[in-house]
Each structure stands twice: as structure tokens, then as C-alpha cells.
Amino acid sequence: SQKIEQNSEALNIQEGKTATLTCNYTNYSPAYLQWYRQDPGRGPVFLLLIRENEKEKRKERLKVTFDTTLKQSLFHITASQPADSATYLCASYNNNDMRFGAGTRLTVKP
Amino acid sequence: GAGVSQTPSNKVTEKGKYVELRCDPISGHTALYWYRQSLGQGPEFLIYFQGTGAADDSGLPNDRFFAVRPEGSVSTLKIQRTERGDSAVYLCASSLTPGLQSGELFFGEGSRLTVL
Image (cartoon, rainbow over all chains, first blue to last red; front, side):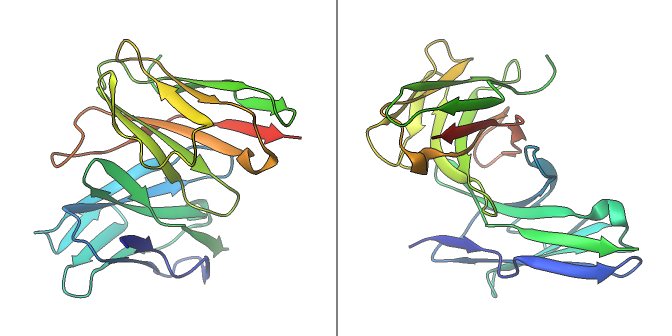
């Protein structure tokens, strides 16, 4: 069956370090992957989209990569801040719908 | 309003009751999605509308769940004979250009359903 998975439930890092989150997909080839941020009690908010023909995409302190050989996307937050603490979700489009991973809860400690 | 609006924000009901959850998408967005999210989990796809029609309802868990979007704007998710396992946050999202062009989803704040 088609799956999109985020292997780490939680990630704790020190302020100023780079956070790296992983998203893997199996048994399908998405045209693009998206990353969302979700704060407690709120709906997810779109951050970045990367297409299958793009290796890397950047936005301010965020960087996303897409490796179609490894079937994996990496999401990086450089110079992390406590305000970056949230759950980060990856999502992929397949056929008619968007499917989400379970999310990784990032905590950045001061 | 500027964003996706969901009502009610909280709903507490008893097992066996009927519940309706409403979603008002961003004006002009033709694609509308319903998701269900349990604590510590990612959003679970339920149904996708393109205009008035349900393009994909494969995520609806059983026939107690039904959704409509009669005029291609507001959508209502209907749950009959609610069960305790239906307790979750129900998220609605809309998109201007679904599919291969962009697909960025704009989410509402969700409706938290608690079935006692």
C-alpha cells in the first residue's frame, strides 16, 4: 500500500543548531511533497513545496530536499529558535488527495 | 472572512447522536478537503470535493459518515449514530488549484468532537 511516513515522533535540539526532519514514502511516486507546521490546537500551515524534478528548495531559514532515488524528503531548519517548536508534517499529493505523515514534534530548547 | 472557517469549534455529544460540522472555505477555492486528526497523529484523509462533487471519498471510515457541498462552497460533514471512537479534531482545508499545479492547502482551525 502507498505510505508516507515520518519516522521520528519527536526531536529535541538546542537553540542555534540545525534541525533535520525526515519524510519517507513507499509504493508510489508523488509529483511533489509539501511541508506544514502545526501548533497545538491549530490547523496546519503550509511552509514549502518541492517538486519531483527539484533537488532542493529554500525559504529563509528553511530548506527542503527531495531524493526520488531514496524516496525521501529532508526538512532543515537552520539557526533554530525556541519559536520554531511545533509539529512538522510532510504531505504528498497522489491521485485526487493529499496524504499526511504522522508528524514530528520539534522542541528547540534555549 | 479571509481564511477557512469551521463551526462549531467544539462539540460535545452523546453516543448515538447525530452531528453536523460545517466548513466555509476561502472564496473562490474549488477544492475542499476534510481530514480527521487524533491526538499525536497526522491528519487522516476523509473526503475531497472538486466543486460540488465528491472526487474522492475513499477515506470515509464507514457509512455513518457523509459529506455534502451542494453549491460548491460551504461543506457539511455529517456523522450519524456517533461512537466514542469518532472523537477527534475534524479539519477542513481548501485549495485554489488542486492537483499537479500547486495544491497548497489552507486549513481551518478544526472542530473538536467529543463523543461521551
